[in-house]
Length: 264
Image (cartoon, rainbow, N blue to C red; front, side, top):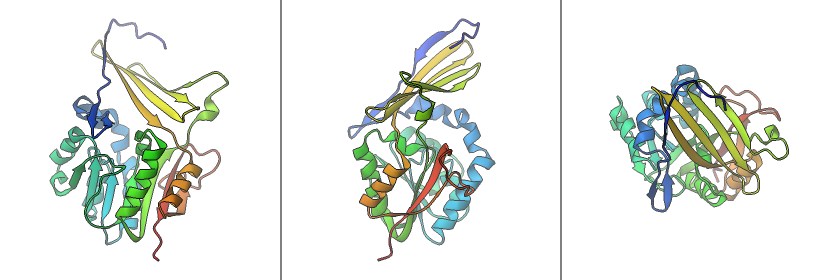
């Protein structure tokens, strides 16, 4: 990585809190800056297509967001008249949600979204913005599908938005793929293909001070997700490249997949 030409001090920010044996990497220091650091994902062009699809799937029913965070999708979906509940491991992120207009009307359960349960049945359960990868084992991801299925009413849908692993960008012997190299932020993913694990590393510079953060993930293939859905009693209904319904192809870098719970 190239230098910035400015003297800086480095303060590692690898914050995690253990909750029932699961690590929370989205504590107060992350929550305080999350909306700002992900500002492009809060823009109407990023949010509106998601809300349109989810509102259509919810119909007159309820929606449950796994990893609800600060309410990027939940709040505009609720504003469309859809009753929304959520599960999130981070009480700091949930506090930001509750402080926003309309946030106090959304019921948030603090817990591991792979296993936590919410009362009642839902027309749609959704997991967006690569959040399935925050579950760092195959066992946890399978449990998440079973949890989603348990919350769905017959005919309901589980929706996942996640990137396609970028292994084609790795030449032999290389394990790192950069995804952002700017004057104030360096970001790169490190892959371990033997365990299907990865970590995202972020180095930020602001006011002459540097900050470093690392978050572990588990990457997962579309076909593997389909098998997880099958184990949970769900079947694939649709798979698109994006929320506008663009067809998914071998060149797609992400997908929006919808599995439904059979009526019978």
